[in-house]
Amino acid sequence: MDTSTVDVPNVGPVVMRKSKRAKRLCITIRPDQTIRLTVPRGVSVRKAKQFLHSRIPWITKHLRTLRELGSVQQNLRLPKINKVEARDTLIRRLNEMAEIHHLNYSKVSIRNQKTRWGSCSAKNNISLNINLARLPGQLRDYVMLHELLHTRIKNHSKEFWAELDKALGGDSKAMAKKLRKYELGLTV
Image 1: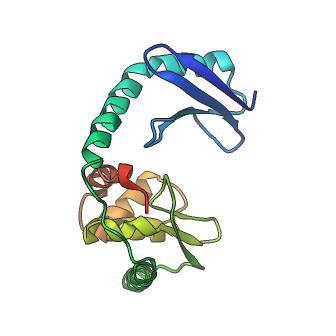
Image 2: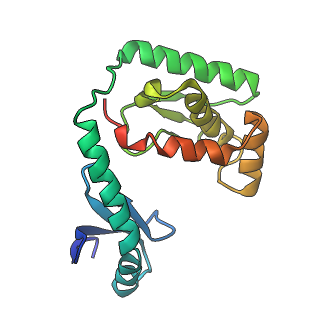
């Protein structure tokens, strides 16, 4: 089984996908309400289904939130982004933050990502979501600093969060929580 679909009562279809890269079982609900269960190699289908069924309350809660947001968003127009301007602004700010915090990256790319605000590769290439241009400046800076710090610390260890707290001069976990409120509007 690389990919299969399971029909879960009161939830609907869930796509189960085996992944060589996954380290743990993970449920993802997309803005279009598609539900996916990522299953690491070595985890049985039976164990994956048990995990899925144990998370039904979490899934139904988030589906309800998505539906409520969907009805609200139908009446809201997300601001248009001038992609050229947004790209220039994001790169300029990334360079400023790298200089301020003495962090170096190899390359930067600006893309319209559907599930991430940013990422940092093993080769220190940073990818930023163009939708960062829609965020308040404080959250935009948080994402950029988060990715820049990954050029030095490649994981989310206690050391990483402590360094991020120090660089931000505050509670990075609180910033991450604020950022989650914006995650459903990731479309250009």
